[in-house]
Image (cartoon, rainbow, N blue to C red):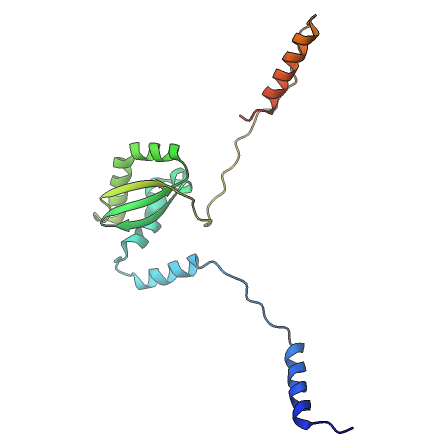
Length: 166
């Protein structure tokens, strides 16, 4: 049986390529390398947004930094995403102190106002919040009740109280 030498060579190359397992490149988060590149480019601190993002956790503290994220800086107004409406209210009350700390940390008046908006925070690396320890729940003993309907009502009330989150 005569074989075509060109087809045999192509077939051999194809089989050789198929035998070598392809290296799989997994997706990487771009935030870390991008921060490093910007830090090298911004040796004199011209990118105020980058400096603000870097200094935000130090300026506001760990508790606030976990629930906020700098979203932008435009016309000397920093926009900060916040995890909830209650936090927005608290941060608006603390705005003068936050602005003073930011200006001290930045060393200039790059931020003249802070605007807090509710938004979804990115999944950046941040310390996990530890759950608060909950006290153990003890069974409640009802006193002797003669009315069975009243006893059932109390039992269902205690059961609902036990399911409620605190």
